[in-house]
Image (cartoon, rainbow, N blue to C red; front, top):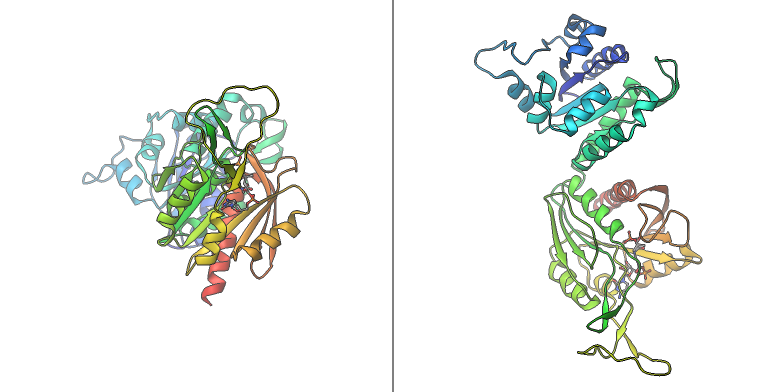
Length: 402
Ligand code: PMT
């Protein structure tokens, strides 16, 4: 995966710099073209000459050391790089990037580049757990930076804990796998539904459910990250989209969602219905607020349209994926929905399970395709589960083409 890739390696000042030497050596052996940029701190641990010899390229240490008068070095390298890796990344460099500080060659270049950026932290365990560092890392993740988590073990500072720079071969493996999937959905149009629907009783009351939209929004971000153009039909939720390739359409009722989904269905290659659509709505919606009365109130309800069923019945080339939110015998009910709704795959979550289902940041799901091959995706963030779901969809789409 990394052959012929142009890689900028940013090396910052920590004892793990010695591992960066091995990383350069392994990257160049894989056929990558590596240019190394060192902070002042890094040069205290290893001489630039070592990296020059290993990469067979000049090493950059000073913003004002312009080697070629025809070029501005930091812009030239920023434009040249396909991938930027920062290893080891200190707490200092992470914080500087998070605040847009550009006070040396590396930080200036990182601000100017459009390359995929991978950060492999290495620091003392207490520094790694400090709220400032955690906040800064979160901010960078939100901006699309990729972290390669440090390993746990004996640290040079004498502590045992998390903070040890990941091994060079693992760093390369993680980046290679990530790059392999970067264009997974290039050219695909993905239609996703998220959140609940609201079915009004009167102007102030409605029936709804506990869906927060987190699952559907995570799927939309993952699809966009993998290169798809995404249409996200969202019920009333408090969620924001981040990726520019997501076109969000807000709806309220099941009927609105039906219309919005059908408006975009013909064009779609992949459809995922993560929304928790109301199955019933009041037969009558009152124009004015209903007055309290003595005794019980009975509200007559009627079925809404089953959007997913209609998609499964009418689909041509679309790969249609449903969700099943179950509390008992999830696999059985999930399989039944897969067949009845003519789906290509279904994602089954037991919403009674701790860490799964409504309103939490994590999920536990089983992906079941129409050949009845199943994959259990254990407890992970909804972001990670979403990525795994697209790997499985891409796998199944590839099988269909064969
Ligand atoms: O939004 P979060 O808080 O992150 O929670 C995520 C989730 C629990 C909502 C999600 O993981 C999930 O399970 N979504 C499906 C919820 C659901 O309505 O499941 P269901 O088993 O009742 O419906 C089966 C499928 O039919 C779903 O794909 C649903 O979108 C679809 N459906 C249902 C009714 C209807 N009228 N039209 C539909 O399209």
